[in-house]
Image (tube, rainbow, N blue to C red; front, side, top):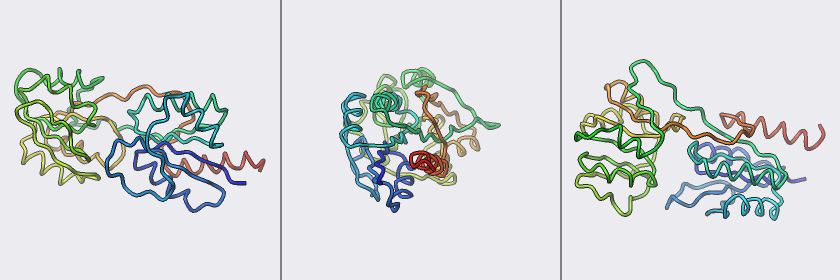
Length: 253
């Protein structure tokens, strides 16, 4: 019997999980992407792009496609998608598993200021002009138009359209991972004195955090949102183990 698995993705872990499951005959895997990235990396399984229409739409999809297991491997800050996933899995009567990379932990010499959202980050930057590295998604950038006194360095996978309505913004297109030494060199060259970022966890974007620690630069960090209380694992290996355990139970082994 083939078991159909839907992975809600957009993260490195989602892609790695899809790669690990792609060659297993007992699984029929589909990877769902939100469709916000113009040129996503290639994936080894069929990809569905775009939203579902909330929890109800996702629940209907799970039923229509006879999905047996839903893996929520979305970004740790995709709180609405995770809430919809938990509700949809309950309505469809199927198991859900959350793949959540652990957050970064404060280390000695880190200069972290924790905030709830972009508006709070703007307030934390203060009124005086600063050179700010914005390591955020496009959805959070608009709030910084209310603080045009700062100079911004904005790095993103896709172009920021429209550009921020501020007098001094530099845009860099790049896709991680980003090494600590390269991040340190960039921060020094650009004379950055504050970084605004999310506590995404993982190694791919940790370089800027380590570089900021070494250089004594303030990091204004978004707190992670509360996510629904579903069964959760932190690594791809642990996810594979949990899926194998689930499969054994399904087979009555």
